[in-house]
Length: 356
Image (cartoon, rainbow, N blue to C red):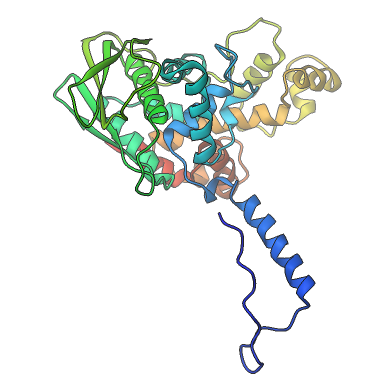
Protein backbone atom coordinates (compact mmCIF):
# COMPACT_ATOMS: atom_id res chain seq x y z
CA UNK A 1 0.00 0.00 0.00
CA UNK A 2 1.48 3.28 -1.00
CA UNK A 3 1.88 6.21 1.36
CA UNK A 4 -0.78 8.92 1.39
CA UNK A 5 -0.30 11.72 -1.13
CA UNK A 6 0.39 15.23 0.19
CA UNK A 7 -2.55 17.50 0.83
CA UNK A 8 -3.66 19.51 -2.23
CA UNK A 9 -3.40 23.28 -1.99
CA UNK A 10 -6.10 24.71 0.23
CA UNK A 11 -8.95 26.55 -1.45
CA UNK A 12 -9.90 30.19 -1.17
CA UNK A 13 -12.63 29.52 1.31
CA UNK A 14 -16.33 28.94 1.10
CA UNK A 15 -18.37 25.79 1.43
CA UNK A 16 -16.31 22.59 1.28
CA UNK A 17 -12.96 24.40 1.52
CA UNK A 18 -10.16 22.55 3.33
CA UNK A 19 -9.35 24.18 6.70
CA UNK A 20 -6.00 25.86 6.88
CA UNK A 21 -3.13 24.00 8.56
CA UNK A 22 0.41 25.19 9.13
CA UNK A 23 2.82 23.61 6.65
CA UNK A 24 4.75 21.83 9.37
CA UNK A 25 1.61 20.36 10.94
CA UNK A 26 0.44 19.16 7.52
CA UNK A 27 3.75 17.44 6.86
CA UNK A 28 3.64 15.77 10.27
CA UNK A 29 0.13 14.50 9.61
CA UNK A 30 1.17 13.18 6.20
CA UNK A 31 4.08 11.28 7.77
CA UNK A 32 1.76 9.80 10.40
CA UNK A 33 -0.67 8.67 7.72
CA UNK A 34 2.20 7.12 5.80
CA UNK A 35 3.23 5.19 8.92
CA UNK A 36 -0.34 4.02 9.44
CA UNK A 37 -0.51 2.99 5.79
CA UNK A 38 2.65 0.91 6.20
CA UNK A 39 1.22 -0.81 9.27
CA UNK A 40 -2.07 -1.52 7.53
CA UNK A 41 -0.29 -3.13 4.62
CA UNK A 42 0.92 -5.90 6.92
CA UNK A 43 -2.54 -6.89 8.11
CA UNK A 44 -3.93 -10.16 6.70
CA UNK A 45 -6.98 -8.55 5.10
CA UNK A 46 -4.91 -5.85 3.37
CA UNK A 47 -2.54 -8.06 1.38
CA UNK A 48 -2.76 -10.68 -1.35
CA UNK A 49 -2.36 -14.26 -0.19
CA UNK A 50 -2.24 -17.64 -1.82
CA UNK A 51 -2.15 -21.23 -0.73
CA UNK A 52 1.56 -21.60 -1.34
CA UNK A 53 2.20 -18.60 0.91
CA UNK A 54 0.38 -20.10 3.86
CA UNK A 55 1.89 -23.54 3.37
CA UNK A 56 5.37 -22.07 3.09
CA UNK A 57 4.92 -20.26 6.38
CA UNK A 58 3.72 -23.50 7.92
CA UNK A 59 6.81 -25.23 6.60
CA UNK A 60 8.99 -22.50 8.10
CA UNK A 61 7.45 -22.89 11.55
CA UNK A 62 8.24 -26.51 12.32
CA UNK A 63 11.32 -28.65 12.62
CA UNK A 64 13.65 -27.48 9.87
CA UNK A 65 15.32 -29.97 7.55
CA UNK A 66 18.17 -27.64 6.71
CA UNK A 67 19.65 -24.33 7.73
CA UNK A 68 17.67 -22.28 5.20
CA UNK A 69 14.27 -22.73 6.90
CA UNK A 70 13.37 -20.76 10.01
CA UNK A 71 11.87 -22.28 13.16
CA UNK A 72 8.93 -21.23 15.27
CA UNK A 73 7.00 -23.05 18.03
CA UNK A 74 3.40 -22.78 16.89
CA UNK A 75 2.59 -23.76 13.29
CA UNK A 76 -1.19 -23.83 13.87
CA UNK A 77 -1.45 -20.10 14.54
CA UNK A 78 0.81 -18.84 11.80
CA UNK A 79 0.89 -15.20 10.82
CA UNK A 80 0.13 -14.22 7.24
CA UNK A 81 2.60 -12.11 5.30
CA UNK A 82 2.56 -10.17 2.03
CA UNK A 83 3.17 -12.07 -1.19
CA UNK A 84 6.22 -9.95 -2.10
CA UNK A 85 8.29 -11.16 0.90
CA UNK A 86 7.30 -14.72 -0.01
CA UNK A 87 8.66 -14.31 -3.53
CA UNK A 88 11.85 -12.77 -2.19
CA UNK A 89 12.34 -15.58 0.33
CA UNK A 90 11.76 -18.32 -2.25
CA UNK A 91 14.05 -16.57 -4.74
CA UNK A 92 16.80 -16.43 -2.09
CA UNK A 93 16.35 -20.11 -1.35
CA UNK A 94 16.68 -20.84 -5.08
CA UNK A 95 19.83 -18.72 -5.26
CA UNK A 96 21.45 -20.60 -2.36
CA UNK A 97 20.28 -24.15 -3.03
CA UNK A 98 18.88 -24.17 -6.56
CA UNK A 99 15.39 -25.08 -7.71
CA UNK A 100 15.75 -28.49 -6.08
CA UNK A 101 15.81 -26.82 -2.66
CA UNK A 102 12.66 -24.88 -3.55
CA UNK A 103 10.88 -28.03 -4.78
CA UNK A 104 11.84 -29.78 -1.51
CA UNK A 105 9.81 -27.28 0.51
CA UNK A 106 6.85 -29.57 -0.13
CA UNK A 107 8.55 -32.25 1.97
CA UNK A 108 7.91 -30.04 4.99
CA UNK A 109 4.25 -31.08 4.94
CA UNK A 110 5.22 -34.40 6.51
CA UNK A 111 6.42 -32.62 9.65
CA UNK A 112 3.47 -30.27 10.14
CA UNK A 113 0.76 -30.33 12.76
CA UNK A 114 -2.82 -29.19 12.28
CA UNK A 115 -3.78 -26.02 10.43
CA UNK A 116 -7.08 -25.13 8.73
CA UNK A 117 -5.44 -24.77 5.30
CA UNK A 118 -3.66 -28.11 5.47
CA UNK A 119 -6.81 -29.81 6.75
CA UNK A 120 -8.80 -28.48 3.83
CA UNK A 121 -6.28 -29.59 1.21
CA UNK A 122 -5.46 -32.99 2.69
CA UNK A 123 -9.12 -33.91 3.09
CA UNK A 124 -9.76 -33.56 -0.67
CA UNK A 125 -11.33 -36.77 -1.97
CA UNK A 126 -9.86 -36.52 -5.49
CA UNK A 127 -7.24 -34.69 -7.53
CA UNK A 128 -9.99 -32.61 -9.13
CA UNK A 129 -11.29 -31.55 -5.72
CA UNK A 130 -7.75 -30.72 -4.55
CA UNK A 131 -7.28 -28.45 -7.58
CA UNK A 132 -10.70 -26.84 -7.10
CA UNK A 133 -10.04 -26.17 -3.41
CA UNK A 134 -6.62 -24.71 -4.16
CA UNK A 135 -8.15 -22.31 -6.69
CA UNK A 136 -11.04 -21.50 -4.35
CA UNK A 137 -8.60 -20.61 -1.56
CA UNK A 138 -6.72 -18.28 -3.89
CA UNK A 139 -9.98 -16.55 -4.81
CA UNK A 140 -11.07 -16.35 -1.17
CA UNK A 141 -7.77 -14.68 -0.24
CA UNK A 142 -8.10 -12.19 -3.12
CA UNK A 143 -4.95 -13.30 -4.90
CA UNK A 144 -3.92 -11.49 -8.07
CA UNK A 145 -1.70 -14.43 -8.99
CA UNK A 146 -3.93 -17.42 -9.75
CA UNK A 147 -2.85 -20.98 -10.47
CA UNK A 148 -4.68 -22.51 -13.45
CA UNK A 149 -5.26 -26.28 -13.38
CA UNK A 150 -6.28 -28.82 -16.03
CA UNK A 151 -6.75 -32.56 -15.57
CA UNK A 152 -5.06 -34.61 -18.28
CA UNK A 153 -6.95 -37.91 -18.23
CA UNK A 154 -6.95 -39.96 -15.01
CA UNK A 155 -3.23 -39.80 -14.38
CA UNK A 156 -1.94 -36.27 -14.83
CA UNK A 157 -2.49 -32.73 -13.59
CA UNK A 158 -1.24 -29.67 -15.45
CA UNK A 159 -0.77 -26.26 -13.86
CA UNK A 160 0.24 -22.87 -15.12
CA UNK A 161 0.77 -19.62 -13.24
CA UNK A 162 -1.30 -16.64 -14.25
CA UNK A 163 0.67 -13.36 -14.39
CA UNK A 164 1.21 -10.91 -11.54
CA UNK A 165 -0.29 -7.69 -12.94
CA UNK A 166 0.87 -8.60 -16.43
CA UNK A 167 4.20 -10.19 -15.48
CA UNK A 168 4.83 -13.92 -15.24
CA UNK A 169 5.34 -15.41 -11.81
CA UNK A 170 8.96 -16.14 -10.88
CA UNK A 171 10.07 -19.64 -11.84
CA UNK A 172 11.15 -20.31 -8.25
CA UNK A 173 7.64 -19.71 -6.93
CA UNK A 174 6.02 -21.86 -9.61
CA UNK A 175 8.42 -24.69 -8.74
CA UNK A 176 7.63 -24.27 -5.05
CA UNK A 177 3.87 -24.53 -5.73
CA UNK A 178 4.54 -27.66 -7.78
CA UNK A 179 6.57 -29.19 -4.94
CA UNK A 180 3.75 -28.59 -2.45
CA UNK A 181 1.19 -30.10 -4.85
CA UNK A 182 3.45 -33.11 -5.45
CA UNK A 183 3.65 -33.70 -1.69
CA UNK A 184 -0.14 -33.48 -1.38
CA UNK A 185 -0.60 -35.95 -4.25
CA UNK A 186 1.79 -38.39 -2.59
CA UNK A 187 -0.24 -38.17 0.61
CA UNK A 188 -3.34 -38.97 -1.45
CA UNK A 189 -1.67 -42.23 -2.54
CA UNK A 190 -0.34 -41.23 -5.98
CA UNK A 191 3.12 -42.73 -6.31
CA UNK A 192 5.76 -42.99 -9.04
CA UNK A 193 5.08 -39.30 -9.57
CA UNK A 194 6.97 -37.55 -12.38
CA UNK A 195 7.12 -33.76 -12.70
CA UNK A 196 7.86 -32.22 -16.09
CA UNK A 197 7.99 -28.66 -17.42
CA UNK A 198 7.54 -27.16 -20.85
CA UNK A 199 8.95 -23.83 -22.01
CA UNK A 200 7.39 -21.66 -24.70
CA UNK A 201 9.43 -23.57 -27.29
CA UNK A 202 10.31 -27.21 -26.90
CA UNK A 203 9.02 -30.51 -25.51
CA UNK A 204 8.22 -31.55 -21.95
CA UNK A 205 11.35 -31.92 -19.84
CA UNK A 206 11.48 -34.13 -16.74
CA UNK A 207 12.40 -32.28 -13.55
CA UNK A 208 11.58 -34.59 -10.64
CA UNK A 209 10.60 -38.15 -9.81
CA UNK A 210 8.55 -38.55 -6.62
CA UNK A 211 10.43 -36.38 -4.11
CA UNK A 212 13.80 -36.39 -5.95
CA UNK A 213 14.77 -33.36 -8.01
CA UNK A 214 16.44 -34.40 -11.27
CA UNK A 215 16.45 -31.08 -13.10
CA UNK A 216 19.09 -28.34 -13.19
CA UNK A 217 19.61 -25.76 -10.45
CA UNK A 218 18.04 -23.14 -12.71
CA UNK A 219 16.02 -23.07 -15.93
CA UNK A 220 17.14 -21.08 -18.95
CA UNK A 221 13.54 -20.28 -19.89
CA UNK A 222 10.59 -19.90 -17.52
CA UNK A 223 8.11 -22.78 -17.91
CA UNK A 224 4.74 -21.95 -19.39
CA UNK A 225 3.25 -25.09 -17.85
CA UNK A 226 4.14 -27.94 -15.50
CA UNK A 227 2.69 -31.42 -15.41
CA UNK A 228 2.48 -33.95 -12.58
CA UNK A 229 2.02 -37.52 -13.85
CA UNK A 230 1.46 -40.57 -11.62
CA UNK A 231 1.43 -44.19 -12.69
CA UNK A 232 0.51 -45.97 -9.49
CA UNK A 233 -2.17 -45.57 -6.86
CA UNK A 234 -1.67 -46.89 -3.31
CA UNK A 235 -3.52 -46.53 -0.04
CA UNK A 236 -3.59 -42.84 0.92
CA UNK A 237 -2.08 -41.48 4.09
CA UNK A 238 -4.52 -40.13 6.69
CA UNK A 239 -6.53 -37.55 4.79
CA UNK A 240 -6.40 -34.86 7.45
CA UNK A 241 -3.80 -34.24 10.12
CA UNK A 242 -5.57 -33.47 13.40
CA UNK A 243 -2.66 -33.70 15.82
CA UNK A 244 -1.65 -30.41 17.43
CA UNK A 245 1.70 -31.53 18.78
CA UNK A 246 4.34 -33.93 17.43
CA UNK A 247 5.01 -37.20 19.21
CA UNK A 248 7.13 -36.50 22.26
CA UNK A 249 8.11 -37.75 25.69
CA UNK A 250 5.39 -38.74 28.13
CA UNK A 251 6.25 -35.87 30.47
CA UNK A 252 5.98 -33.19 27.76
CA UNK A 253 3.97 -30.36 29.35
CA UNK A 254 2.54 -29.22 26.00
CA UNK A 255 1.21 -32.70 25.19
CA UNK A 256 -0.25 -33.11 28.69
CA UNK A 257 -1.95 -29.70 28.57
CA UNK A 258 -3.38 -30.31 25.10
CA UNK A 259 -4.72 -33.70 26.20
CA UNK A 260 -6.46 -32.15 29.21
CA UNK A 261 -8.07 -29.43 27.07
CA UNK A 262 -9.11 -31.92 24.36
CA UNK A 263 -11.10 -33.93 26.90
CA UNK A 264 -13.34 -30.92 27.53
CA UNK A 265 -12.74 -28.29 24.79
CA UNK A 266 -15.90 -26.36 25.73
CA UNK A 267 -14.81 -25.87 29.36
CA UNK A 268 -13.72 -22.37 30.47
CA UNK A 269 -10.14 -23.40 31.07
CA UNK A 270 -8.00 -21.26 33.35
CA UNK A 271 -4.34 -21.71 34.36
CA UNK A 272 -5.55 -22.91 37.74
CA UNK A 273 -7.88 -25.49 36.19
CA UNK A 274 -5.22 -26.76 33.80
CA UNK A 275 -2.65 -26.96 36.59
CA UNK A 276 -5.08 -29.08 38.63
CA UNK A 277 -5.89 -31.28 35.61
CA UNK A 278 -2.20 -31.90 34.93
CA UNK A 279 -1.32 -32.34 38.64
CA UNK A 280 1.10 -29.48 39.08
CA UNK A 281 1.18 -25.98 40.45
CA UNK A 282 0.19 -22.98 38.35
CA UNK A 283 3.71 -21.58 38.56
CA UNK A 284 5.24 -24.89 37.45
CA UNK A 285 2.81 -25.20 34.53
CA UNK A 286 3.50 -21.66 33.36
CA UNK A 287 7.26 -22.11 33.65
CA UNK A 288 7.26 -25.41 31.73
CA UNK A 289 5.03 -24.06 28.96
CA UNK A 290 7.15 -20.91 28.70
CA UNK A 291 10.16 -23.16 28.05
CA UNK A 292 8.26 -24.33 24.94
CA UNK A 293 7.40 -20.72 23.97
CA UNK A 294 3.67 -21.11 24.58
CA UNK A 295 0.98 -20.51 27.19
CA UNK A 296 -2.08 -22.33 28.49
CA UNK A 297 -4.43 -19.88 26.75
CA UNK A 298 -2.63 -20.34 23.40
CA UNK A 299 -2.95 -24.13 23.67
CA UNK A 300 -6.65 -23.81 24.49
CA UNK A 301 -7.14 -21.67 21.35
CA UNK A 302 -5.40 -24.30 19.24
CA UNK A 303 -7.66 -27.12 20.47
CA UNK A 304 -10.82 -25.06 20.07
CA UNK A 305 -9.81 -23.80 16.63
CA UNK A 306 -9.07 -27.31 15.42
CA UNK A 307 -12.38 -28.74 16.63
CA UNK A 308 -14.32 -25.76 15.30
CA UNK A 309 -12.54 -26.07 11.93
CA UNK A 310 -13.67 -29.67 11.54
CA UNK A 311 -17.24 -28.69 12.43
CA UNK A 312 -17.26 -25.71 10.05
CA UNK A 313 -15.84 -27.72 7.14
CA UNK A 314 -17.95 -30.83 7.64
CA UNK A 315 -21.38 -29.54 8.61
CA UNK A 316 -23.91 -26.78 8.11
CA UNK A 317 -24.37 -26.14 11.84
CA UNK A 318 -24.89 -22.47 12.69
CA UNK A 319 -21.69 -20.69 13.68
CA UNK A 320 -23.24 -19.63 17.00
CA UNK A 321 -23.88 -23.27 17.87
CA UNK A 322 -20.32 -24.26 16.91
CA UNK A 323 -18.89 -21.36 18.93
CA UNK A 324 -20.74 -22.41 22.10
CA UNK A 325 -19.91 -26.09 21.58
CA UNK A 326 -16.16 -25.46 21.47
CA UNK A 327 -15.58 -22.84 24.11
CA UNK A 328 -15.93 -19.55 22.22
CA UNK A 329 -18.03 -16.83 23.81
CA UNK A 330 -20.05 -16.17 20.66
CA UNK A 331 -19.92 -16.35 16.86
CA UNK A 332 -17.95 -13.08 16.66
CA UNK A 333 -15.30 -14.49 19.00
CA UNK A 334 -15.08 -17.63 16.84
CA UNK A 335 -14.79 -15.53 13.66
CA UNK A 336 -11.90 -13.46 15.09
CA UNK A 337 -9.90 -16.49 16.19
CA UNK A 338 -10.64 -18.39 13.00
CA UNK A 339 -9.52 -15.52 10.79
CA UNK A 340 -6.16 -15.48 12.56
CA UNK A 341 -5.73 -19.22 12.00
CA UNK A 342 -6.96 -19.44 8.41
CA UNK A 343 -6.81 -15.95 6.88
CA UNK A 344 -10.55 -15.88 6.11
CA UNK A 345 -13.90 -15.79 7.93
CA UNK A 346 -15.63 -19.10 8.79
CA UNK A 347 -18.31 -18.60 6.13
CA UNK A 348 -15.69 -18.28 3.36
CA UNK A 349 -13.82 -21.32 4.65
CA UNK A 350 -17.03 -23.37 4.67
CA UNK A 351 -17.72 -22.31 1.08
CA UNK A 352 -14.26 -23.54 0.03
CA UNK A 353 -14.75 -26.80 1.93
CA UNK A 354 -17.95 -27.44 -0.02
CA UNK A 355 -16.15 -26.97 -3.36
CA UNK A 356 -16.41 -30.21 -5.33
